Structures are given as C-alpha cells and as structure tokens.
Length: 100
Image (cartoon, rainbow, N blue to C red; front, side, top):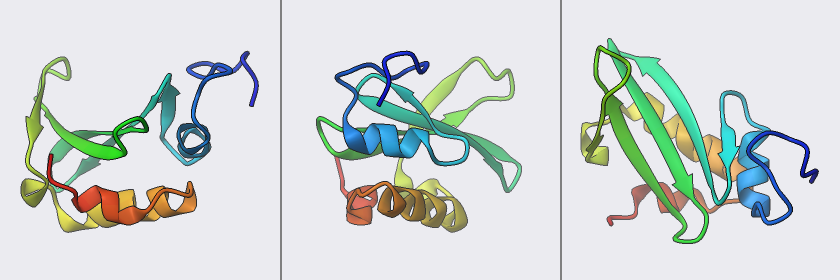
C-alpha cells in the first residue's frame, strides 16, 4: 500500500485499501465510500473499518445533501452489490446487516 495514492496512507486498514480497489469505491482514511444510482435514487455507502459497519445515505436531487437511511429502505440489488464488494475485500459480508 502506497502513501502516494489518494485517500490512502500508511495507516489505511487493509480492508479499506481492498475496497478502494473495487469499482467505484475510494478510501478515505479509515473508511471507504462508494456512490450508486438505482431505481431512480442516488445513494452513498460507507464502510468504517474501526467499527466494522456499513452506513447508507440517500443523496437528494441537489447532489449536495445526504441523509442517513435505514438499510431496509435500500434496494436489495444495491445491498447485494455491497455484500459482494465487502466479501471480495475480505470483510465479512454479514456486517452489512448489522444494526447500529
């Protein structure tokens, strides 16, 4: 892992770095984020390594405002894609279902 890559430094967790290698994801220190469009909605998804959790945000039409949403309101195909990406990065995909 190189400190010269945007969003990564020598302390970026391996799981975050592995997500950064997945399509659309980018590392931001101890977290990784991806943006999705689907079913007429836009979402930001964040994985936080220290707490081993996933948060979903619904992005409003202005593209500037996001509000946290419960995972039960997120389309199943998006949730499945997140679980696939987590698994490919060496993260237990079960963390996607964890209640906070």
